[in-house]
Length: 85
Image 1 (spheres, rainbow, N blue to C red):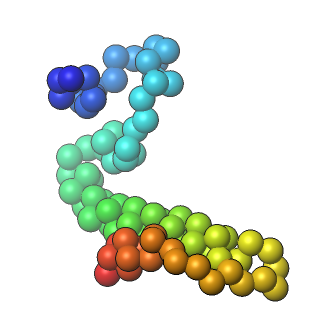
Image 2: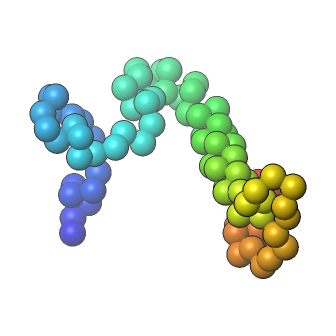
């Protein structure tokens, strides 16, 4: 598999291909000056969003129904703490 099979540097118009690829960040559409200003904040907010996803996943696993707590070995804790750090 080649790098060009995975990474697209430009879009070839609104073809059916649009639905096969996911844009990882909206700043790719910004001008270069604005990209540099927004990119650091965007990265911080992305890590925060992923931390929220992981937290709510752990919370739902440990609290399956209201007023019930499940104590179990959760392998996601260490990656979660690393991500938050």
